[in-house]
Length: 267
Image (cartoon, rainbow, N blue to C red; front, side):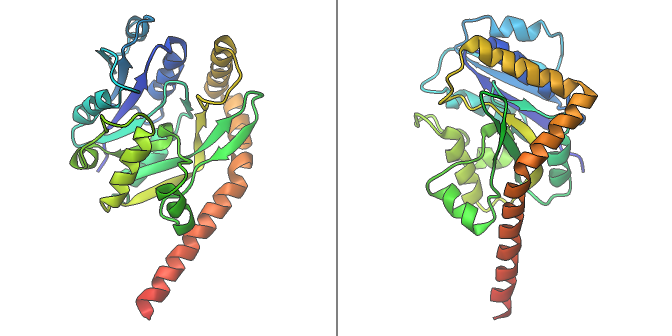
């Protein structure tokens, strides 16, 4: 059974990059049913720019500025998605065209209720670093529940009903609301799986020295590469090379965990 995808893109006054992010969502090989952009107190023409794209799948939830990062507004996306899947995308990140297709295979097969995909962190000079962990591998799981979240929000998809069942997005935290929600979903017993082939370009919002114009130019260049078949092939090769060692470590950790679980059952 094929699940329906709703894409959720939270944003606050990043008109230029949210247009690029939305384009990468609309141009998926497995098209989403809707793209809900949560405009958290936007005053820079975000809504008008998105509506000008002329795609009926785009819905702009134009809301007054919420507390902190406006996490509470994102619960409207969970409602919009009904019994389907919500795939989150940051307003300054990009998806490769098969991001939803690869995640969708796992949901369609009923083997996961939450999926995180391998991402590549894009450095200011354009180099790529692996960014992602398998939440079921014990070593990585311990870090995920403890000290570190190495999964950007744009790499996570989950059943909307399951998120509503654990009370959705928190309204009372100042930061890391996504990490909070992913942890509650995992603690509820929801099974996770990971797409090891990288499908997400993660432009970290903090710690960058780029000016905004340079940031927009970099995102624009990468979207152009995604849209060009030859450049997309090169980009996939670069991302795969960047993530190969990390993917191997993740896979090895998961294989070890599976074997250990089997041993414990036999004892």
